Length: 158
Image (tube, rainbow, N blue to C red; front, top):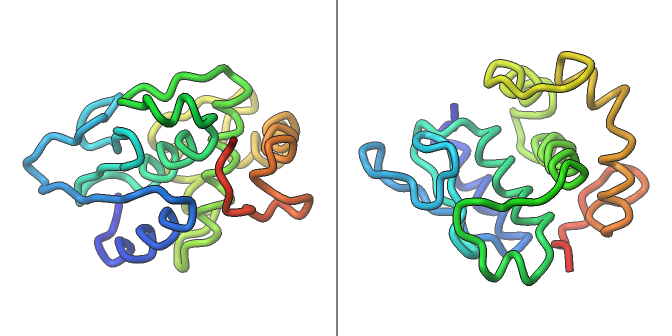
């Protein structure tokens, strides 16, 4: 679950990429939510969430936005689309961004992703990330979204 104390940190993190982050009230529908409430939603350059939105959902949708090319970002509403390679890159990047949030980190994100039901060939998110995600890492490197030390470059895909 997203913790309101993390709101400012998440807003600042996403703002580094140029993505606006807005919290809607708990009883309001989330604009652009692909999975429906309480999952995060995307409309244009804005990510929406409720106080009960899971942090992994916020990071996942943010990473979709980061990984979209410019033309897809410009017309984005609800469904980011993309192929399997991009989806894997999104999952890999959300793990790296979790490390940039004090008190969160990848261990919490792995557990949250597993609890939600992310599905990977090796079973757990951690196993996928550590032993089966070289293609996702290569995709992010090729697009300039991470450096060779797995650090985010704070850029979006062109």
